[in-house]
Image (cartoon, rainbow, N blue to C red; front, top):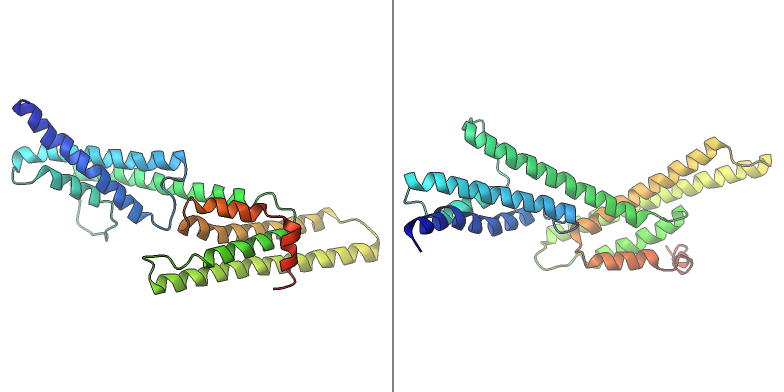
Length: 258
């Protein structure tokens, strides 16, 4: 291998190769509890774009810097570039124009990845809450999801404060579902009573009110499911689907017991 080839490998290829895994680890840490980098093909593509961009910037910085600073190890450039994904406090110090361009591209890719993770989570929650016929079915499903989540709070590496905070969030969001179900049930009872007393069908306005009440229950159920998506693993999705598919008539027997 010639000296030029060795120089290219050490100054350009090595920093990029070191930067890629460091960048991935930092991405996992940065978006922990916010989304799944491997959740969909689109989210993985967005995450991969961040890794490739950061690795390319590491190679570029190394190739331009090392000829003027031979004491800097090429691998160190890759580590520093990848670790740059860890959020830092903003400062008032002006950036060099070249760094401003680099960080602008980095920020655009990170924001794109963040939006993709949020969209994936919203679509997943919408799929899980779709297809129910009434609020009581959503209530039974939400109850099972809450029990499933609380049974998996104690995981290695989660602090006592983190466990208690997650339990509080689960219970609070489930109570929101229960309150929405009760409001929808009260509204339906009032409308049915009015229709019976006046011997008439529901008016379009009453139907709209019922649909809005059902939509609100769906919204709070999806809000609960966000915790399952954020803190659960992809393997847990099968369990959530199983809870969703369980026979609703058998599940309805649990309602009076609460």
